[in-house]
Image 1 (cartoon, rainbow, N blue to C red):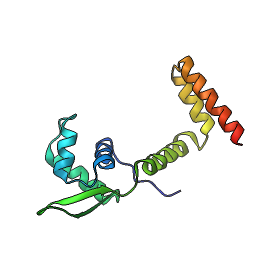
Image 2: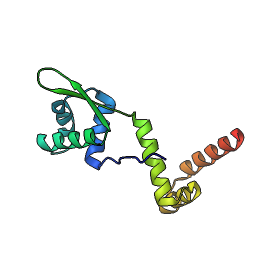
Image 3: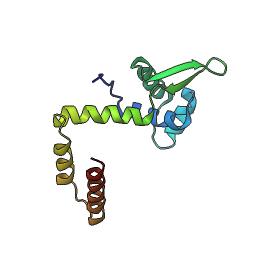
Length: 127
């Protein structure tokens, strides 16, 4: 498995903006993030630079002296890679351990349990 360069929580917030609004300038990213979190412009700029260094963003010349940034990978691809790595490292690639842990630590409602049963039945029919 290819090593996934894991984005921090702040970097993930930037990726979420870009997955919905790309391409964006740092100014636009900062304005969107600032609506829900008190963060300085230079902090946003530093996080964008880190994502660029990790290879998770690409940039191209934008208006004036600015750059336009976009996520290199789709949201689904990034989430899948991070999830696969999490299952591998935390649960030794055991999906059943993951599911048992999630169900054991949660308090699923009867409706959620029914959804899980329906999903398992669907998987059973497909195999």
